[in-house]
Length: 268
Image 1 (cartoon, rainbow, N blue to C red):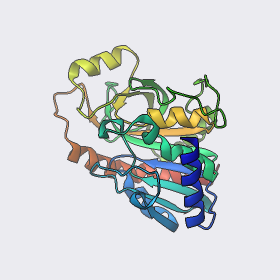
Image 2: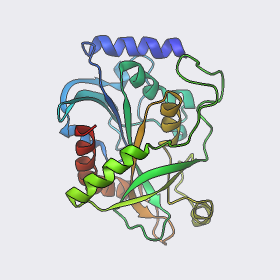
Image 3: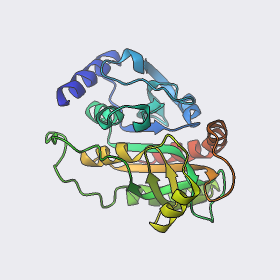
Image 4: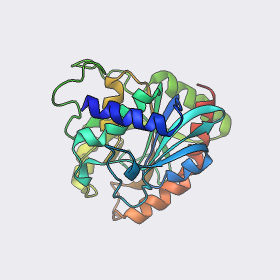
C-alpha cells in the first residue's frame, strides 16, 4: 500500500507542477460549494488519478482542487469516500495519505451530521472536540512505519490550538458555534432513535458516517486536525432522515463554514 500511495502522490505532483499545499481540506455532503471560493490552479478528477477511488454519493463531485485561499496553498477534496460505499478503509483514507506526501501540514475536515445534543438546532456549526469510533479502525493491518507509529496516541485528536483560534474568529465574525463529540458509524442507514439515545448515553453530541477514519490516519501521520460538523437534522426528533434535505442544509450552513475556514487558513 505504501508504494501505491507514493506512486499516486508522484503522479499528482507531476500533474500539478509540484504544487506543495500547506492545508488539506475534505468537504462533506452539501459542502462542496466551498471549493468554488478557492483560487484554483489545478483540478484533477478522481477518475483520472491512479489508485484513487471514485465518489458514488450524490453531493460529492469527485475532484481534487489545488489553489490558494488568502494566499495559502491548499488542496481540497470536493467529495470524500465512505466505508458504506463498499470501499475498504485503506481506500477511504488513501487520499489523506497522498495529501500528506504532497506536503500538507494541517487537515481541515467537514461533514453533515445528525444532532444528538438537545441544545443543537438544524443549521448549527459544531466544532468537533473529540470523536467516538464505531467503524473498523483504518490502522488495522500491517503498520506503515515510514508514515507513523504502530500505536498512535489520540489525545488532542482535534487540535486545541486550532479550536481556540476558531473560537476567536467566530466571535469576531459573529458566527455561532457549538462544540461536541462526533460519533462515527458505518451507515448508510440514518440512525434509529434508539441508536441516537445510545450515542447520547455514551457521550456523543452529533453522529455521522464519515470523518473519523480520515482523522485517525491524519493523526497517525502527526498532522494537526480541525473539524466542523454541520447539524443538518436533529436525530432525537420525529423528523425522518432525508439525504436531499441534508444536502440543502449543508449548503446553507456552508456559507458560515466558508468564512470560518478562510479566516482560519489565513491566520495559520
